Image (cartoon, rainbow, N blue to C red; front, side, top):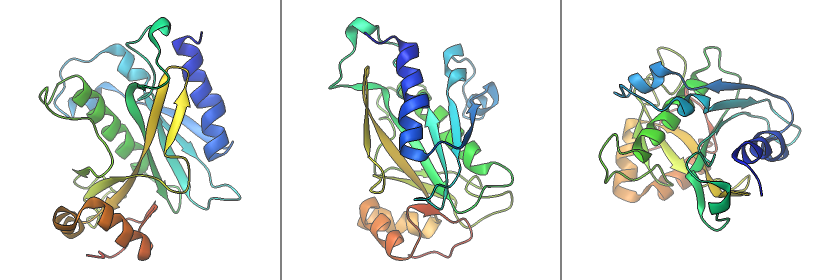
Length: 220
């Protein structure tokens, strides 16, 4: 029976390198500031072990890839209660891809903020009826999508990945990868009328998915 630490190690040392490559840096952990920026005044210290890995391009992927680690760690479940058919803790990890390594680590900061937001959602900090982040969600991010001063992509949409497995299995349960893509205000409004799935298809046609390019023009 796998302990929480063994589940954690398998995800970071086996699963992620298999999916995303061997060359990486991190983990860039969450801190009190990212939670306080979301209005949280008190947090569980275990949340400060969650973070983000940076993966370099590979022979089969030209992009820099960033992925959270910790959203699927079974923090609140004893090994004897693991259910492989159920979701492990939050049941998701977040991924974003960019064409080149960001100079100011904006992709890491973006995922850290989204992960902290999801943790707070799970613990009722924005109301008990607020669901966790999932496919199709559109989240306003202000100026966080891109280097400082970027104003084009002010939101993200969460999409199901097609170029790597959308769901992964741990001893403690499964989890989904939520692929993060930057979108403009006008694209967010278009998706509200036509659906997030339709927007992702449109972005893919115009080269805006799966890799986020903060400098691109709006497609809707």
